[in-house]
Length: 224
Image 1 (cartoon, rainbow, N blue to C red):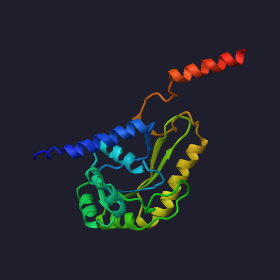
Image 2: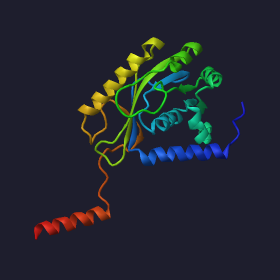
Image 3: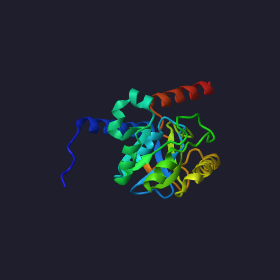
Image 4: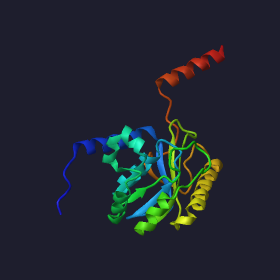
């Protein structure tokens, strides 16, 4: 089998996305059984980073990946097709991708929503799983700013479910993740999550030169 031809545009986009994830997020942590092979992933969608976080996880696993986006989004960002994006009406390509052991990501809320509770679950993800025979996974996804200067991404994979059970299952996983965040030390990563991106040591960055200079001025002023 011959290797796919090198595409400089795809390579550049991939490098840009991965560098952006590593530089802009404090880290990416995952809990639960992450599927390998064909699966329909149904994540919550409350952050701009959601698609990038899932794409990075797939790249690290060597997992083929497609994500459904609205036609309006693809008109604005057509280059994202090189990273696996499909239009939300491209049902046949999504089914073919599942036959080729891809992840197909379908955000069941249908659009980016403000952080909070699950507002709606549309039937597209469940329909794709039913038509393809692929497993359907609810994925709670939060990108949050806690006790560190940069936001952190947490993904909680629930066990596969039947289509009618997706709304309750996704709501449950999201509530569990939110409860873990609420009960956690904001300066430490969540217990039980595996780090995929980020530093092994989780501590605040040491103050830079400007911060040290301001701290010294403040102490000197307080001593007078």
